[in-house]
View (cartoon, one colour):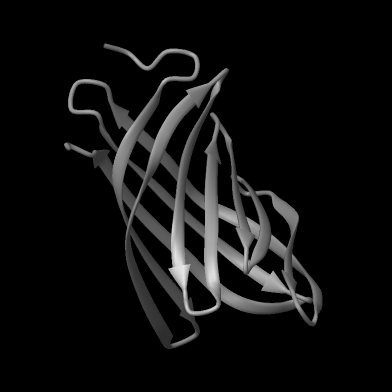
Length: 147
């Protein structure tokens, strides 16, 4: 069965984020539940994170050569990505809006219809307010949630 125009698949998601800045490396891991769906030529992965200060809703939109990471709730972020192209994004905090610039180095998205599982692999360099914040690697895997 293929995913129709707006058929949603409930998925279990594992997100691993590595941030490298010079010799420093930080790793964050998260397991969440959400949904995966296709609309027109884009595919979406949507999930919520529970943080101390409240929930954060994340939507990752993938198309052939572009991606967009949107976060809303306690944190508001708009992070556009396009291979080897600098794009402007924003990060909103209670203290103001910070400008971010991304440069995507890798964008791979796979979804296996048969196993109803997939992955998103994003690597990008990021600057905030003109200062290099590091190279970010998001390795996301997801599979259909069996009830």
